[in-house]
Length: 357
Image 1 (cartoon, one colour):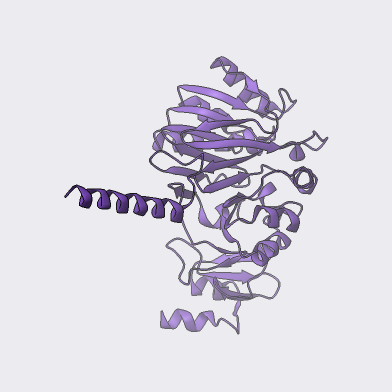
Image 2: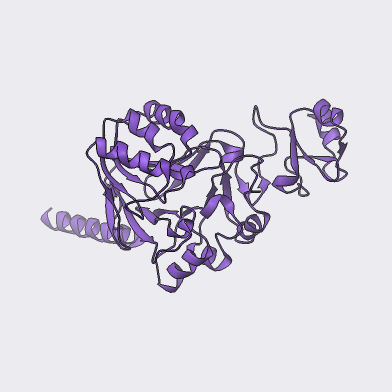
């Protein structure tokens, strides 16, 4: 009997060893329990993200001043009564303007980060004054500094030097949670990207927050190859005057086979991970590669057709001949498209699809 018990114990030990070897080493940042959520809040032509993990929270940017009430209600609706950390990537209004709305709701803030201690920007100084009223000063981190939010580790990767262009001075940080990682780039463009690449920064990430709302000057091919994301998030406003996201940028994402989420089409975007698996939920529409919508049927409240202003043709949202964003107009019914003087695309035949669906 004793011999059988020893054999059983030996077999159990070998089984445990095999399972451990098959699963690989456990990451130093692996969560003890629970999930991490990363909310990309739809603040139009601006930026804001909320990270929730292990009962702690991190707000990265807060949109424009006009988004203050949205930030207030978003935190309230998600039960965030304290912000453990705030990162203001740089002092421009579209990144810091709405943070005061968040500060008006929460009872306290742990620590706030910025690439500069002071700036002439009115909205930045308004945020600084509100933080000071709450007993919080600004911390200017150095590259390599890190902190933890719940079980997630946040590491600052940039800026490596300061420019006259404040966009290039954006705080760049990577968030690691188990095997899943997010890279936040603010409005950093090619100059800042090149410095990080040449400096050997650990840029690899599962999800990339695309720099500068999808500007053609951000997320270069070299940078994208180094990050190698599975997902990219673009924070921009529908039909914005800048033409974001730029077609060149979308082409680079398509070439890299990156699944794209866009606040202009998807509204709020929420990623959830346990440190191993990753899922994404969007407020509306669907996610796709580059500028192509993958979902065949539009979600409720979403446009059914995309019109080409130049050619006066209208297309299904899944058509491979969709016009650029700045050359697009959206229709919610067949009657609206025809009534606007547009003709059906000969390839996707949207009028035939309307009849048979």
